[in-house]
Image (cartoon, rainbow, N blue to C red; front, top):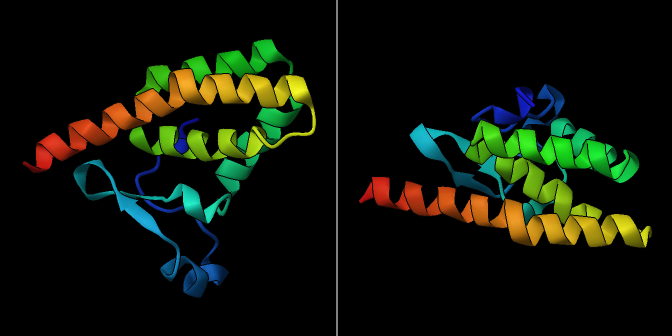
Length: 122
């Protein structure tokens, strides 16, 4: 969770050329996060995807609750990407859960961050 709050793109150094071409958004305080259109390009987001795809619902719910309590646009953006991918799961229970969490919890929190950031910029 802590790594997911990093305010910069987390990529391996051997992928510098790839990273320069990735779509990003500006975050709070000058940081950046990967656009959801790029998909899962960071190892931390891949780890979230794996966790959300394999753990019991109680553990997934706890992860989302903790992430929302941390109130980080960077973590929320990464969780948003992981959940978008999880909605594509072939496990109907997991994909349904992911869609509900994405639309009712994570996406509204992300949009709130985006609105707050827009207000800060004036």
